[in-house]
Image (cartoon, rainbow, N blue to C red; front, top):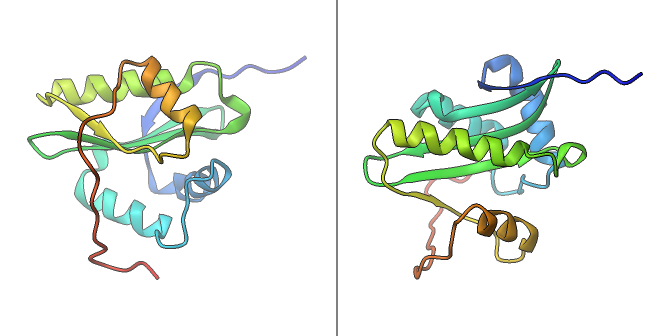
Length: 145
């Protein structure tokens, strides 16, 4: 008999840190130039309301990190553990994120997808997202390593 646990969207707590970093690693989201612990620290210092975890039993199977600057919303670190993908969890997280932003008066959500990540691009296409006619520019202001 396999146990089925309810999933709950909740805000991140410090006790979640190790499980979240492991999840990000399992999902291939970490990069050598971005220290995940520093990303967590920065998010918690700025806007902890926008750091969500998807809990299932005692585990964390998904995350989303969102923000709103008064002009546009942004989303990062949306992921669901590979063993739990294809079950609607990412869609549920996205719907929750969108509802949080709408409640704050946010008119548009921007997100970044690596151009090589075609399955994720297809996921967002299915949710009604489309490629904007912009380019993304970046400059590292504080090195993590």
